[in-house]
Length: 173
Image (cartoon, rainbow, N blue to C red; front, side, top):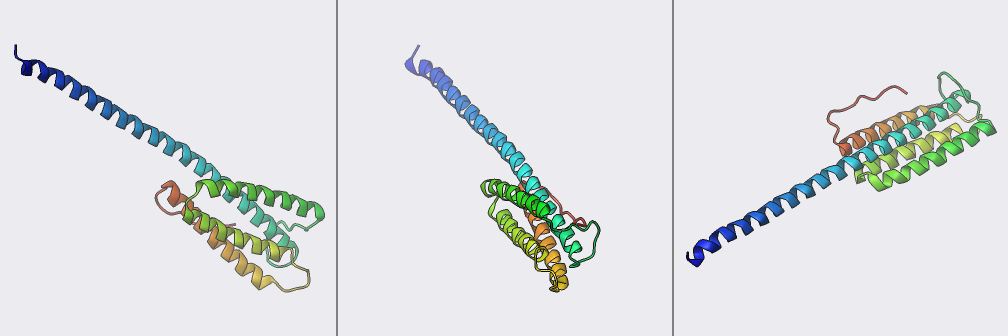
């Protein structure tokens, strides 16, 4: 038996083992990446939803105060008592804490949309807490429309970042 007939099968085994190792390694790496992607997508979804809910709740409370102050029409007026303002302060602290998670997980476009939504929310707060006797009715209505547009943009950017297909029509409120 010559040397070539012994080396060729051995070389075939070595090449086969190396290819098997390479393919297995690539498959494991791809599997790990998929698992990480699913994990972070779940975290992003939770962060986006919790933040949107916190902002919407604050905007609703500011709208109720604006109704009580006569800045706009609507149900369920809420007088801005010290207890109410303390509760709103706590809700704002919670919203701020939730925003930190978004800054860690969201993409640039979603973060930019979040910041525009925050600015709209802060304007609603400023108008709702303004001194009684000043006419802010036109300002409130436009500020609320602007806030709603910013909120819609945030939701669209979050959906895009999560890979959710299609578009969503804004809900009233």
